[in-house]
Each structure stands twice: as C-alpha cells, then as structure tokens.
Length: 187
Length: 187
DNA sequence: CAGAGCATGTAAGAGGTTACATGATTAC
DNA sequence: GTAATCATGTAACCTCTTACATGCTCTG
Image (cartoon, each protein chain N blue to C red):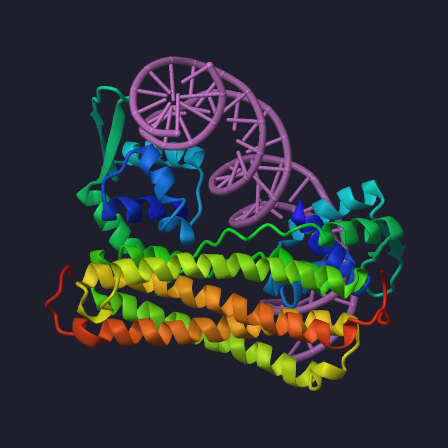
C-alpha cells in the first residue's frame, strides 16, 4: 500500500512517466523507498483507476510515446490524509547483523573484511549525499518550506551513513583487538 | 532466502522450538530481522527437509509437546559459507521520509507532531537497548569472541536509535524555526 | 555495428502479512 | 471465569523480485 504513497510523493514533486519514476526511485526517492519499474507500472495503473493520478499521453518524435502522470486533487487529499496518520516503523532487515550474530562460526578475519567492505560502501553513499547537499542546499535555513522538507530527508540519509561508518569503525576496532591472533575459535 | 539464515543464526545461539523462535524474533534477533511465527514454521519445515536443522520432539506434561530444533553440522557449514559472502544492502523503506518528502501538502504542525512521536518511540527503544547493554555487556573488551560479535549487533542498535533521536531533534528545530506562523502554505 | 538509453509491459515464483483454528494450563 | 501463555499449524492474499519481451534512437 505504501508504494502508492511513495509514487504520489514523487508525482507531487514533479510530473513523471513510469520510466521517469523508475529512475527517480533509483536516486532521491529510492534513498528511502525502493521499487522496481514493474511495481511502478502496476501501481500506476491502479492509481489511475482510482483517480488519484491522471495520465496524459505525450506523442514524441524520435522516441517512444510516453504517458505523463500528475497528481489529481483527490490524490493530493489522499496523500495529505495519509501523512497525518502515525507512521509504521520500518521492519529493519540487516544481513550483516545476522552474520555478526552468528559470527563465532567463522574467523574474525572474515567479519573484519566484510565490515571493511561495508564501511567503504557507506562512505561512498555518504559522499554522494554530501555532494547533493553542497550543490542543492547550500543555505538550508533560507529554503522555502517544501524544499526544507526534502532537505530533511537528505539530512537523514547523511546522518544514517555517518552512523554506519562510525559503527563499522567501532566494530572493526573491537574485533581486531584480541582476535587477530589465531587463538579464539573456529577457522 | 535470508530468513533461513536468520533462523540458523538463532539456533546457533541456542536450541529453539518454533514457538521459542517466534519470541526470539520479537526481541534480540527481531531487532535486525523480523519474522512472524507463520514464516518461521514454514521455513523450519524446509530447513529440516534439507538437513540443515534437526528437530527432536520433547514430551511435556502440563504443556503441549514441543519440537526442539538444533543446527546440524551441515547447517553450520552452510551458515559459515553464507557469512563469508558479501552482504546485500538492505533496501530501506522509511514511511516518515516519504511523508516529509511530500510535506508541503500538510501544515508543518502535522510533521512536527509526527516527528515528536517518532522521537519518543526511538528514545524508548534506545533505553531498552541500553538496559540490555548494562545488564549483559558491562565489560565488552573482556567478552569471549562469540559474545563480542553479538554485543556489536547491540551497539549497532544503540547508535541507530541515537542517530534517529538526533535527527528528529534537528528536523523539529528546523521546521519550528520559520514555519510556526501560519504563513507558508497549505492547511 | 554494438551498447546504452528511452519506454512499456507480462509472467512466474518467492517472500511476507493477516486471519482463522485448536486446545491445554496458569495467573488474576 | 477471563485473559494470557504455551504450542503448532492452514489458507488466502498481497507484495516484491527476477526473468523475459519488444522496438526504436542516439552515441562511440
């Protein structure tokens, strides 16, 4: 159900074709809600049936025609109503933590190298976010309301990645401390 | 597929019945991998078929019989192999961020009160984690390897919650700054 | 002329949620 | 006696992922 609202949120920002949305869900929106193009096309069809969005076919030369979708006033109202309701907490699923939890089945070296890889990934993502911040939100306090809201989602991304990098540091340090000598347990 | 490994991780920690696992997935393991009892029973049956776990029926007086599951050596090996592979990053899905992204559709008051609610929830969870830390991991550096690994999953939980609380503070502060007067946009 | 990008879809299968179902015991 | 806890399942449904499919244009 929430995928519907994620699509509405995207369309509230700008009109999109299904294809545009799919790309959108690989950057900005995708940073906090993931979806594939298959899901998006299916959901768009349902949303149009309900009248929450309206599609208009745009003829294009040199390229396949596309269907641009926009929020209807009904869609806006539904979105506003949804926003006002208490959010469900996301069910986190973190493979790395499952692995650590059963970490005694492998040597600390295995864990350390996985954590180092992970740290690198999060550093990379952090850098991406920080570049967006520098480029689009240099003076957050002077932003109009709508932009401020979006800025805050970026801030969440940044602190999230910083947090992961910091935790990886901590974890690697602890695991290296006494477990580098081959004494503790399993191979 | 990963649910299987989450179950193996739990059974590596201790033998469990399906019922025990379901409870386990509402606390410790559940903090980073969620599953309902229906999923668990289905998966356990598959895992037993494959010989990764072995169930033994325990007759009980005064209570229904139960079937205790334990990791087999095959299961241990499969788990170790899985741990050594690079982890998939979790696809984050954060309703609150979707809401913020389209925040211009509602008044800042709505967002602020939702963020305050959320902050409270994360503070609560943080406290739970910190109590576990105090009670079970008072001296992390002296822990045996297996316990250290599990301790690190708890540390991730703690810094995750701290991070959310901090971000909520930041977001609330920014939204309160200029948007408390009824000037900016929609009702 | 190969590969990337534009643009939209179908179909099968895996994974997850919700509701229903049972039946005993223990605590208030 | 009412609710909670122990213990295990089935069935229907929804959501998500992965693979397959098409066809055109622009870039190198």
